[in-house]
Image 1 (cartoon, rainbow over the protein chains, first blue to last red):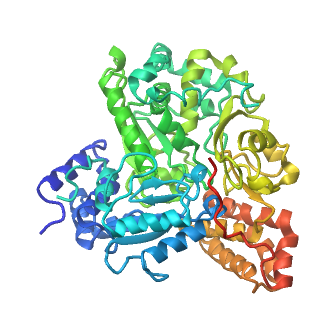
Image 2 (image 1 turned 90 degrees about the horizontal axis):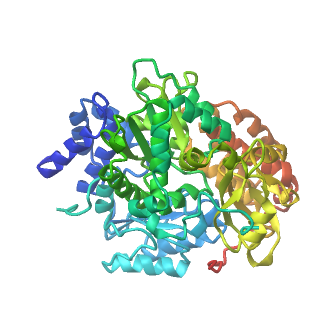
Image 3 (image 1 turned 60 degrees about the vertical axis):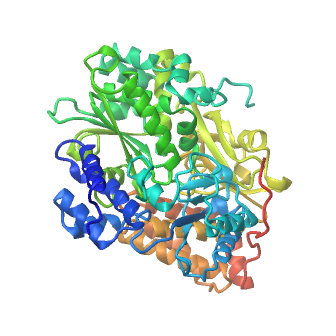
Length: 192
Length: 433
């Protein structure tokens, strides 16, 4: 079974069509997000299909996918929790927040995916929310001025199957659904 | 001080109606584009040149001059690329500008496109700004529907398409040639210049790449004129700029100020001082890539020339504040870890140098430093600075060099005592309201 088939294949073709004639290679990045929205990460099959759509080799697509941190190349949680620990956030207590996230997710240091497969925890570089540090994103939706206690509550909610409302901006759903938005597509029907 | 000048870029921030195109037009939005449509490209460029607008993304290069370098007779298309990859640690003013006033960015982009004869513009937005990409998607749709984008804009024969392209988490893509590589579907690695993007940029065609704040400054310049723009700021750094202030301050945030306003005003009047009444120890004027300054520099005017004279760079105008309880070695190590993580790997001094520097800094911070480590760090900066393709390496070296320049005693104390004399406090800090 292909990763991109049926309506997903139509969407892939629409994405390729966004770029100027002869410049279809530019569609690699949104196509990788589309693959991620289907699989929850980018598998080798996904890389090969993107390559096929653009007339590239799998290696050429893999070279791109491995460069950027927002493409997950290994099985990933339903939700991705990103905790910024860059300087502005660390000055406001981000290291404790990151530690609290680990504990609340029941994870060991070095583990990136929780045992139940629900949460991937990611230590982030600057998320551009220095005015509301410490900054946290859940599936790229923002949570501002997060304390350790709030971090535990956020992770607790995710483990209970709830998705907390972001501090700002629209709620876009799970990591798969957020990946669909990142592909420039409406989020409805993401996990169909 | 905040009340003694008329806000420009942030003047409509209290009015959420401008997020929609009707509200934006009610405030005179898209009038500048109409004016520009009746001007020759050379006249648009001349107006921006006379205003003295300088690029707000960090380098401060004169915007009008950048546009004038684009040849329009090569037979190739020309491109405008908006750099909304805002990733410099400590910087978030572009995010708030787009959140609160997205149409001003589209209008500025359209005027830049007219100036260089471009019919396809790209906005490269960092992937983590998912919310802002949705704000822009809606604004773009509205602008097409209202006839400010698309075929024959405002009934003229001018076409302009805007394509939104999302990044995927790579600081280096804020570097303009790396951004172009990324937009073309490659790894985001910088390219050798020359050829400069103005001559051979996106798809090997003449390209202008501008920061969000730069382009958002353009509509007012067209409507109100260069003289108006120069009423604020300094002779060489005209206009206002948004500053982000973060870290140990009472009221972190984005604040607009005339260029040349001293740090003291930003820190004490707007950000309400150092958190908890503690004292200022060190600060970055323009993100982590600009050399640290100290409390002795609190009266430095924040403009390109004055900050350079003080030994640093205005950069993105992102002030991160350390107080007297914060450890400079720890901060330098955290910033260096960032560069080690974000180095694209192309150039050895950057790829290897940042990795080793972080290890040595960590060793010093953890109390295992040796007497050789401080001289090694002094030497390290010299072997990284100006020895790589792009400025990422220079930013990494600036952190190391400036922290040693101003805080050598603190490094030596770590080694002598075998521990950090000043841990970054781990207690929760009450959120600023």
